[in-house]
Image (tube, rainbow, N blue to C red; front, side):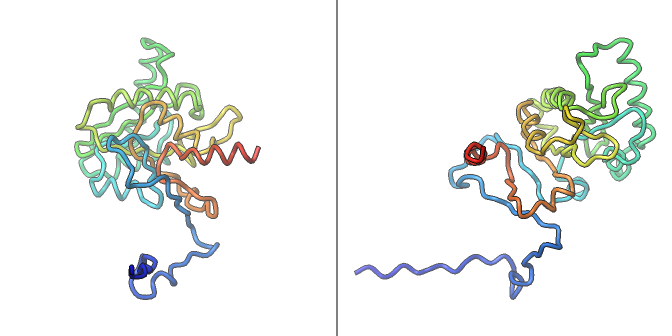
Length: 241
């Protein structure tokens, strides 16, 4: 006669009474992470984009977790952009936000004379010794990035990363919620995060992405930690239409 199966207690996240004390309420910033597939069936190869929910890009950069960071830049004013923060906080950097903006302006003027417009947006590389910054240059005369600009920029970024293990690991901002270098769709509004991830993925990017801080408040909407999202999402959307 077989012994009855022992029921395992539910896993605990915190010691003591921490699990109960850490139950989130609707007043707190929170996200709900949904599982995507069975991790025991995962394959080796890095074929997904990891979404770094709840993590700080700047803190992870200072901790040396990335060799390359991708963000946006323009030729007018980047004082409120992530590129300026990165240039200022990395101790080995010889760049300032003013010198980087000036460089972007000179590059933009030179490209308008000698370059081909169909290659925009260009990608500027800033070597801070301990960190590489790939800054997608907002096309001349535009106040925002369009999804088409974004797609073409990330195709260039992916070529710059292809086969270059010395430029890994790599992380990118989401380009959403930006102040200096906004991303808009054909309606002049910010696109869904899913569209951003799709453009990155289709361009060949397979690094990490850091969501904007307002996305941390999306509960009770569930979030996946990797892209592509599971096919079950499309099936649910088809069923609701």
